[in-house]
Structure formats: structure tokens, C-alpha cells
Length: 448
Image (cartoon, rainbow, N blue to C red; front, side):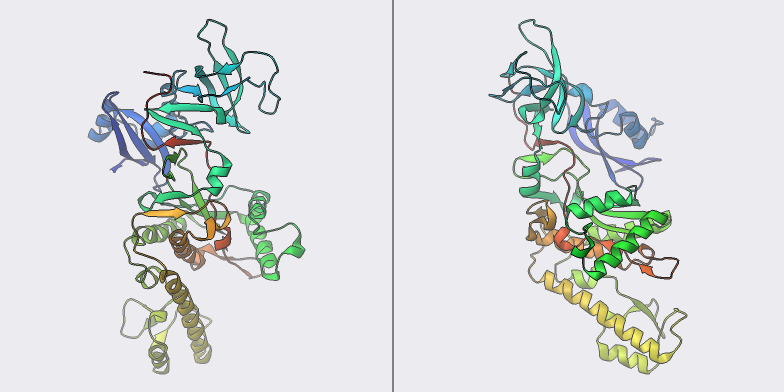
């Protein structure tokens, strides 16, 4: 991947006939922004360094939008590829255009049917409807109105795209390539009410406080205080373009929310992101039985004569106990000067981290070596409860956030506010965008 002053890019596909490359653009933090089409000449200029533009500049100039499909998925540079010749009514479909997305279809007016040519006005989808202009082959004046996108079929580079429905997204099986996964760690921009609405939709929170257990109510109250006073850090796993046997999701923004953590400086966000990225990179390479020992970051203590510090949970207790009795273990925490209190602290940490490792070992016992693809049995809450590999990876990533020091903070009353981690039964991937694209090229409908 070529490095530029801001952001990076990589070639995904070559179109020799049109002398264009499809390239994926990422920001400076490595997060995928989307894909663009660049002429051979532009790519050559970027490669040689003769171009003064960088990928992020080109991304902004193209409209900061994604490669194909409505709902802000078509960038300005790509819209030229989606003209009236590439959008059609699906075979056998017929309809009359609406004046507005919420209005009833007219009883009279031009009837659209067959493979009538249609042109999108601006690719904005509202409540499942898109504004289009239909042109008639018999010379009648064009008509403009809103159409159910479920009636449309389009083509991009001989690949068919259609509307992605909520039912097929949330209830169907989708796959992700582990090589496409990215880690999102950024300053959150949602209000507390927006967060509550999302957590309520998933059943994690309820405005009826009687429906929540005491600990959840306490944690939610502290989280609200943190968000309203200082903001928060949003942590998620980016999934690239999920796909199934026939289709690939058009949007590159599909993700699974991992946590809402304390607001932190950019340097700390970068550190957390790097730790989580290391997990994403190492997880596919390791055997399931190796992951608990390699991916869980346990508490470290100073050991006389040892450098660096040691993770005591990865030692037998009798060894740790002997070190304590010999006075070889120490910590830089100022409130642990009393030897008895320090021994109790070490015992608690050892038991806690042993439990974390054992939980990971239980998960590993039912997993096979990774083969490059992660499955989501469904995208709704719980991911279908049989998406074992995805759940295993998410547990390791959540563990990184849970025990990252800057992800927690103390309020004015010295109460510790820990990250709000999404429960495994609530892991989900919200539908992003409105379109799916065929994985294989097909002949254009209505064209020779």
C-alpha cells in the first residue's frame, strides 16, 4: 500500500477496457473510507510522486462518499458511471411514481413497466424510496418522482446491484474476510439520548428503571454523567464489505459496536487502536488454543532480577506465592505499601486474570483453526448465537478495552466509571447503506 501525506490507497481491481483502477482509500488512522475509480494516468502520477494530491484530498473532492449505491454511497467522481443506461425496473415490475416518499402512488399517470430506462436524481434514499426521472422510448416527456428502490436493478461495471432489505440483512447469514477487518477508535459524536435510544433498541437499557438490575442502572447513570460532562470514545470493529454466496454489501461502513469508553487524548486512542489492531492481526494466525496465552494482556508486576515485568496470571499460584513470601514482587502503586494489603491485591489480580484465561480456553475448545472467513449467522442482537469465531474475536477485543487504563475515568466523587462494553447477547451489525452488489459480473439487463 502506498503511503501519502494523508491517508493511504491500494488497488482493488483493474479495468483495462476503460483504463481505470478501482482503489480503496483509507484515512491516516487506517480506517477504510471507501472506494474510488482512478484513471491509469492518475495512479501512475500518484505512484511516481509527481501528483501533489493525496488520497484524502481526492476522497474529499469526490464528495466523501462511497463507491456505489445511494444513501451517500456514490461519490461525485463515480456518478458518471451510473447514468440512465445502467438503472432499470426489475423484470416484470411496474409502478407509478410517487410525489413524495410518504405519499400514496397516483392512480393515474405514466405507468413504468418492463425495462424502462431510469436516471437517479441524487441517489438519496428516504424511507426506501429514491427520486428518479424516467425517460420513455416513444417520445413522451420524461416524468420525475419517487420510486421504491426494491423495484430497481442497476449495473456498475457489469455487476448487478439491487436494494438490500432489512429482512435479508438482519436475518440472513453474512461472511467477512478477516483480512478486511479494521479497528475504529474515535471520539464519539452522539448525544446521550442517541446512545440510550440505540441501547434501548437492543434491549441493553430501558427508560423504565424497574426493568434494570441495580448494577446496570448504576453503570448507566455513571456513563450518562461521563458522556454529558466530557464526551466519550467510541470503539468498534469495522467489517469491510460483508458478503454471502451471491451478494456483497455496497457500504464499507458495516461495523460492530464494542464499547463506549472514557474520552481520552489522541495519543491514548492511538495506543488502544494499536493494541486492538495487533489482536486483529494475530488472532487469525494463532491456533484457538494459543490465543488465550498470546492475546490476553494480564496485569504485570515487577520481579526482582527480571526485566520486563511479569504477568503473574501466567504462572502457577505456588510460584507467585513463593515470590511474595521472598519479597520479590513489587508494584509502583502508592497505596499498596502495606505488605498484607499487597499480598491480597496480588491474589485478587491472579484469580481475576486466571478466570479471564480460563473463559478464553473454554471458547477455544469448540473452535477450529481459522480459514480466513468469519461468519455472522445473522446481524441482529447476538449475531445468531452460533457465530463462534466472530464472538471469540470480539471477546478478545472487548477485553483490551475493559483493561485499558485510559478507557476508564474517575468522576468528581472519585467513583470509577468503567467502559460500557456491549454484552455478547447484544452484539449486532446495523445495516449500512441501501444496496447490495452481485459478486459475479452479469450481462446488462435489456442490452445485447
